Length: 460
Image (cartoon, rainbow, N blue to C red):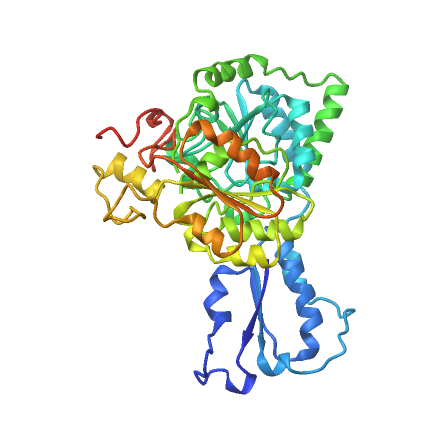
């Protein structure tokens, strides 16, 4: 992402002028790089550099701050200006080391229960990942950001999401594995839980484009700082050569059968979930088959992300069906964007999972704080039987068709009507606030602590 911001005129910088904000300093710690434009002739070079930095290496945000007097100048841009990034270019990861790739293939051939743990770093290398799985037969568990990098409908190899609200069999696979291939991941707390218990039986291979992530949370046995795409291409080439020459024979069918037994014990279709929780519902029950088919705020967990993200997707891909599965708490943070959707006539479908509460916080209150409520009820406290606020009225105010579902048996027909209606549509689905997202591994817990049953109707 490249953010272009406005600044007061150059002569007024540092005078506390009206609306002056030292945005370059404010954002320095949360951007890959930022610029303050002091010469209008530098704009072509700066823009070119900003997009290169944002997209190369580990992708990240770059900010360009443009003073008002610079914005008002006339210029004939010279887009042939060379970039001045020699220091940055020298720090970009080199091609993966062949010797380390050979060592990883050897570890795979020696293992009995290998598992792939893939994250957002694999989104640009889904074809290479599929090829690797085809060559090795290793099952795949995805992070929240990694969903879609491997086809979720491939029931032979896809274990779906792992972590706090991941499938039991995905977490089981990591807990029992003897080799964990961590590709494009950062071992964050929502995946690992108790770090020392995470993949405690396994040798760990970590490949990531960001050297700062390697060994930061979990020490690997083998690590490569490289582009995942290049690393997978190298691994696939070695595997194809060894398989062709008969130098390696891989058969993990017994391991996959063990994991299938776990899938039967804990099928996705039987898990009970609730709604903040709506994000976990969507992650658990929908099978994502393409990279970036799933757009969510994962590591940051920013409420209100769904509607603006849907607008971005609809503008970028006007040929695609865009559905925002949202919760009432998150939706209310950006409800004004309904006006944007109507004005731009974007055919976005909004399915609200409305439980009149901040559902994920309520779940934690139920489980860990004796159901002590801290302003998590979003309805009208004087009449809790009333659905408040009335989401249909928001839609009506923006001339967007809308409907409400209060009975489970009416949901399928209501969904079909939503999908069949041209243009934007809001479907308000009323759900009980007592439901919990399960399975759940408590924060800081391990696989042995997984919760698979119960809801807000039970006292803990």
